[in-house]
Length: 314
Image (cartoon, rainbow, N blue to C red):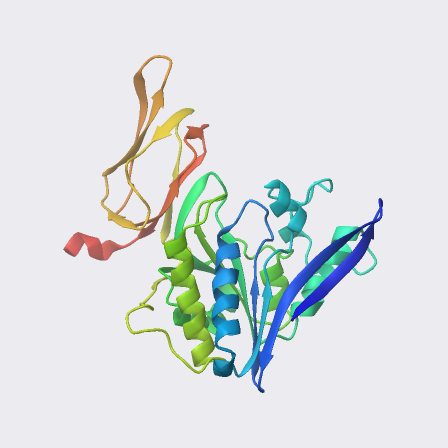
């Protein structure tokens, strides 16, 4: 059943609406699939499709409620903008919103209120257009004891427990977690695109989580949900930053193990035909983020590596 989460009048006889697909069968827990907070992050659109298709075609396997929110920022999705057009706002920086605030603050409040009390919220993001991420769940240190067991059920490639936001107090995930509604933030791939294989992997993980929570009666097929690499130490991630401005070139994809001193890529000058900087791995480990957009300035993020000293022994 398609339901309004919020509906507000706009100036020229139009209506701003956030909708959800409310699917319920039997008595049980409630899980919410949320995405579209940033208009240039499209991976969640396909995951919502896959979950809605799975549940609607097999409703007899459902014992509880699945709420699917595909577009928290529909204007951003329509115009391929990260923030909310005309308001110059990042939707994920104004939660829990304000019922008496501006239009978008009221929208954020209504979304937050509608999600509050769920047994689990999966907040799906993609990376921006600049970075490519391997499938991962990001969790704040304060919520790790509660959320890491759930994240493991997703079987996503990488679980990153860290201090920075999701973690910003004005994000949806922090607002929900701080008031007792568990929320996992999933991130993958690159902005403006859809990776079918990554979306299917997350969908299988959500099915597995639903199975273990008692919401879904069938586990995924054997082998579809694997183990996750857990990074739970603040100093376990090395950041690669550009030493000079130029064009970043690389043949390496994320999700691979690299060694200290290994060439990750180069920053080149199209004008002079010279290599301005070799980008070398500072450590052994898992390259889970890599630059996707080649134009860089001094200090631009080029990659992230999860330090894994065991690679020295292999």
